[in-house]
Image (cartoon, rainbow, N blue to C red; front, side):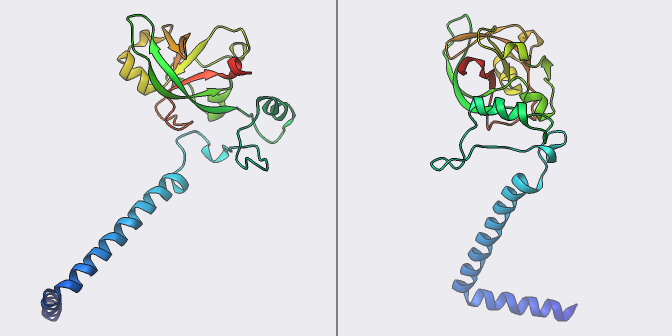
Amino acid sequence: MSTLITELKYACRMLVKALGFTMIAIAALALGIGANAAIFSVVNAVLLRPLPYPDSDQLVMVRERMAKFPMGSVAYPNWLDWREGQKGFTDLALVRRENFNFARTGGGATPERMAGGRVSFNFLSVMGLKPRLGRDFTEAEDVPGAAPVALISDQVWQTHFGGAPEVIGQQVMVDGVAREIVGVLPPELAFPRQAQIYVLLAAVR
């Protein structure tokens, strides 16, 4: 033990003696450790840690591939054909990331820009989730001319409605269209990225 202490004292004296080299070595170590920690955090979040959904290892993202768009969104007619003809999946849902103007009705509320998603009626069931409050979309609502409805995130529920259960049935304005809130989504849903409000694809067919 005494030999180890002597060696450590000697090493410290040498480091103090060559202060420039010591500072460069410390900076290099700090940068290396920081970079490795950052990379591991990303790899852990994206590749190692399972998605917060039931049977997440069975979820697959499918995109269209074309010469000009190697990672393009799936066209709605193609999704219909794929869903009807496929036999390899439990179900196929269609999701499009989009930004909306969102505001509560009444009171002259100023609209705010909010990330969201246009989804097919079966989106939540494919993800293996159920609404935290209220109900999911229905197939009858995912057709042109159906009553406009919306699902909101847990964050919107808490920040805009104070977490009140009476939020179900209230009207909100989404891109100038009054929509009835039919459900609040569970907090673990994080797809599409940063989405806060979900509407059906029927309006853009």
